[in-house]
Picture 1: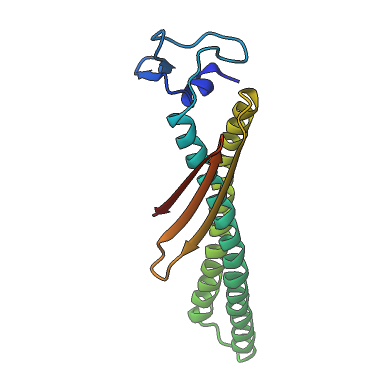
Picture 2: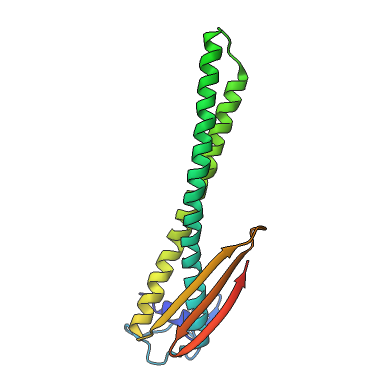
Length: 180
């Protein structure tokens, strides 16, 4: 694991445009093996735990919504395509070809695409956050940090998400509500 990952959760972190995140104590890239002896874990650690775990839980929530969308739009899309097939068969039986069946076919494919697009978005979101979560948990293990994270996500009728967050870290309980 890169030493800069340790610096991301440390309160001593600093930043410069040449090197990115650096150690604020020595003003350069940190040099140590496995564990930083001077790490200070407080504010940045709490913020990273909340940020990464919130994104991770949100990716699970988005996956549930995406599966629902895939089922809903998949069924509607298949019904539209079935109707297109029925209509085209009847029209061909009469010796007529109508561009309306092409339009209906395209509409059916677009409706299927909405459900598939939601699943792709969910997969991409998970592929981004999962490595961050693994790195955070690995760092927590290195520094013997135990935490419990819980969140309840809900969406109102206007599409605004509300996340109630509870973090227990070293006997301290942090509660927060995020709206986005």
